Length: 424
Image (cartoon, rainbow, N blue to C red; front, side):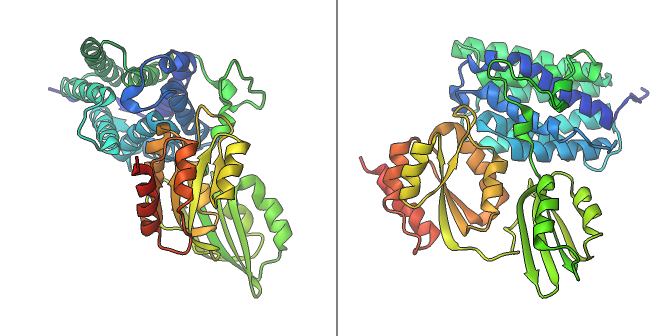
């Protein structure tokens, strides 16, 4: 039998992500209203909307056409832009798809189908527990449907259709077993349906996503707030011709976590940015560039060493408001204030703060269970520099902080702080 010659391109994949974002703009509130207990996520729809929003924003000025390059950028942005437990799982699916499409200019139906199986595997690893959650059960059915469609030599759109059909059957079975529609499983189906609609062109284009005139409706988050900076750029400028103040002004529009350090007539630069090429293009006019490094912050990496840290260990405590933050800071924490209580911080928010050279090591304290996978994802990206304290409210945070001692090692602090939470 002659093989299917159809291919999917980088532009096709861009449309799929736009379609997924459009689908969640329409459905995220309905998903929020469903049962999110299996994900321990009360606002799964909003969290996924903002995660995909970060992925879509990463494509706004992208010139690359290869599907490998587009999918890599989408996966990295989703990893850092992930909010809530549901957002982390979707980000892992996008990361797995990128893994399957790595190095490809365009992808055949077979390669594309296999990339979705990678996505499901990555999502399952992120959960990493013995209980198969409804989203994972549904995802496995989706992967099997895609696999069978690939073997049947179907076109790419039909592969997605068969995957959605298999997932829909699994979703109905889970609903019959549990007695309710699971938010995570339903969100996965909306994501896939949006991808198919985007591929076919049957979706409302989220042009407003990239418009300076973005208007919010009800509580629709502005996707500009979900822009992430997935690349760390560092270099040394020999005989730098620009002053530190001028460098700061020129770099500020291009990123976050900006460090400018003078060494004799040389200057060391470090920043997190969305488009590293833009930084380097301007830096060639400032001096002779040496020791240029570009690091993908969405991959496991070490903390930067451009500047010296102030502390050996610090506590990052998530707070909903100024009053809570003040109470935590009075006990020695660095409070991460979330501007909206619904979404909480993204993985990228934590990464940016941790790279700000406050400390060598960090203990992260949550204030609810919605963000447990967000913190775990940050920990995976920074290897041994992070420990997590799974506190669930302000009272537990305060209780644990009262025994925190910045003079003792991080692991000893975690042991002492956890013991206070386990005391009845």
